Amino acid sequence: MISVNKVFYAHSERFQMQNMNVHIKAGEVVSLIGPNGSGKSTLLRLMARLLKQSEGDIVLDGKSIHTMKSADVAKQLAMLPQMHDHQLDLTVKELIEFGRGPHKSWRGRLNKEDEEIVDWALSVTNLEGYEYRLLQSLSGGERQRAWIAMTLAQRTNVLLLDEPTTFLDIVHQLEVMELVKRLNEEFGMTIIMVLHDINQAAQYSDRLLVLKRGKLQYDGIPEEVLCHEMFQHVFGIEVDIFQGSEKPFFTPKRISKKGGAKCEQKNVLPLS
Image 1 (cartoon, one colour):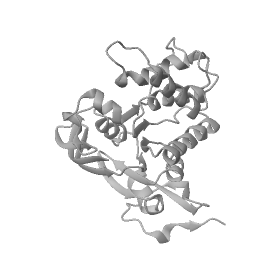
Image 2: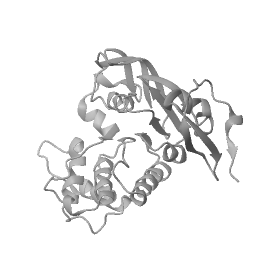
Image 3: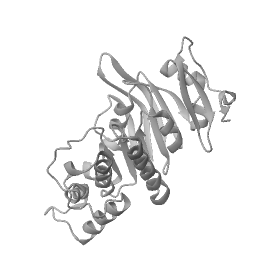
Image 4: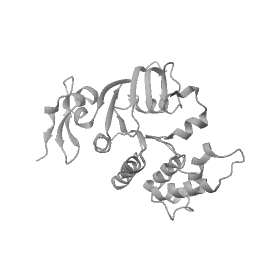
């Protein structure tokens, strides 16, 4: 579905992404985790063609992404950036209609199919009845769902989300994560997201990619990646790791003075 092949990228002397290799399969939910400045958002923006690598290639569904027309990319891949202008004087429906941009004719008018897709996006994100509410009148969680609805209106197979739960309280964070889960399970969407909450990433992802200083350090299922060595090596902390009902989770203990190495399954503790 998406392959990042031997990609090099540098936006300053202090940050370089070197020889990045990642392959995302269709239908996966993949979270990028790592410290601030590790390259998570940079990698996501490279996948979305918002940045251009200096070396290597990024392939979307068998085609080099930089040889594709922008409209063709937008019909296959949608990205929701980290920050939005919440002061936009738009209704929820007007915002969602922007998602139909890649599919519009040159006249720029919505047809019956467009209207049906906008209604579908409203329904999937539980925003029916909010169509004519102004964005600034919404709660943080409602507003985030409206932005996600806009990306859904593109009707793509791939959705990239950059810190979709940032600045939301816990109940609205869970609303967004449950929506992500539904989009994957019911509609088969491939979802790649940057998350700061490692426990949420573990609970809602098939795979975790762990970055540090522009390099991929770990790549695997949560049960393999959440280990003491990873937390010591990447985050510089010591943790307790527990096995929940479905996925592992951790609690931080102290700053680590150790290095870190390869993860081992024996480091996962049973939850009493």
